[in-house]
Length: 73
Image (cartoon, rainbow, N blue to C red; front, side, top):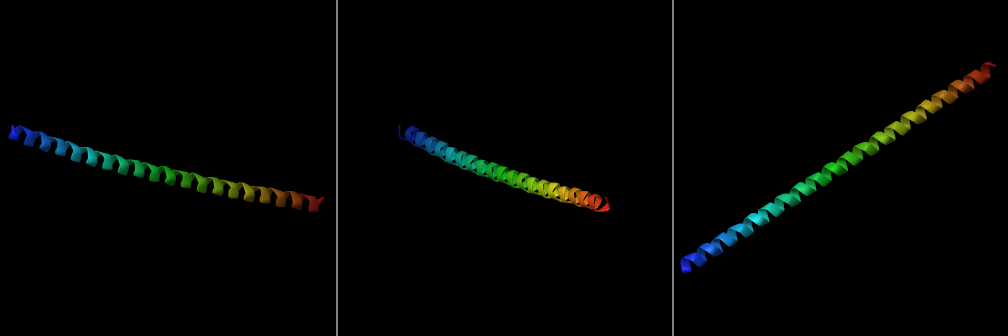
């Protein structure tokens, strides 16, 4: 019976180690997914800032053109 108990203990220990490794891998994958999501959010925010800057520049050009037209009148 000692051999069977030793085998059971070894199997249980191996199962626990596998579960720990799987949990660690899951945590790492989750961390990587979070980082990727953060990077995507950062890129989107940068794009929104650039869009707003472009719209501002376009408005300034339009206003300058209107001002020039008013001067010509």
